[in-house]
Amino acid sequence: MNNAADPYNLKHPLRYKIYTVLNIDSRTLASKIVMGLIVVVILANAATLVLQSVAHIQAEFGNFFNKFSLYSVIFFTVEYILRMWSISCDPNYRKPFIGRLKYGLTGMQIIDLLAIAPFYLSFVYFDLRILRLLRIFRLLRIFKVARYVTALNLLVRVMRRKRDELILIFVILIFLLLIASTAMYYAENAAQPVNFSSIPEAMWWAIITLTSVGYGDVVPITDLGRLLGGVIAVIGVAFFAIPTGVLASGFSEEFSLTENQGDFPQLNPNAHPLKQKFSPPKSDQSTQIPKE
Image 1 (cartoon, rainbow, N blue to C red):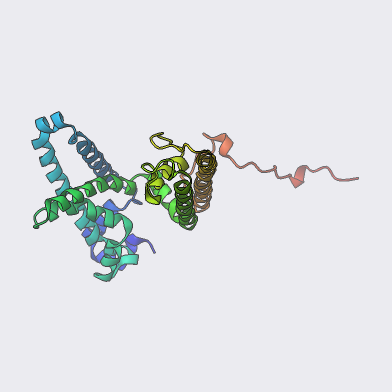
Image 2: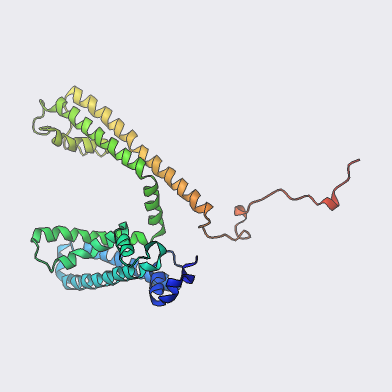
């Protein structure tokens, strides 16, 4: 059933209008304008967060930054409330309370809530250290842009499709990290009791080596340690090619699925001749030469 023809939406035209404007699948001009505005505000917030860390810029424009942050919080709060209010137009979240609760627990809505939470928590008595930590959640405003950028939505769908494989790769990485740090601890502890004083200390070297970064601040000096270091470095290079293949496979599957569902825009075959599907010409029975 078309959402516009849904009896519930016909009874609540304003709510359905807001739902349509805020829905990323909408193709209306109003929806595109609103989405564009939201993306601009998100990117401006990201730029502001970066500039605030520069002392002389913060000293000169600190008042402007504070006002802009306040207006941004109000803007995002209104957006959040309107999304929660209008989501009942979606049949999947039709129940007034349960539906909104279910929608509020989705990934993007949690990000939206955490992005504005630090501002409101500042009115409650909190340890200043905790409040400073909560301000890090302002970074989550950047992730709000994923809702409006098709490429980022595609990446999210691919990671969701391949989550089991990615979780398995992460678990294997943890095991490799533990094995590498333990082996290097026993190989280097006697020669470097400060740099490899414990297995957790050796994990720093293992992380840097497995990821092929190699800062060089901690290096093995024993023959066994160097041998293990070389083997672990090669394993790290080979291992990190695995998630690349998994993601590439996920993108291929997602593109195929999207194409089969007809979500790609139709191309003009006259303007794109290479996209035409050619088929052998049908023979005209009236012009066929009779067999002798």
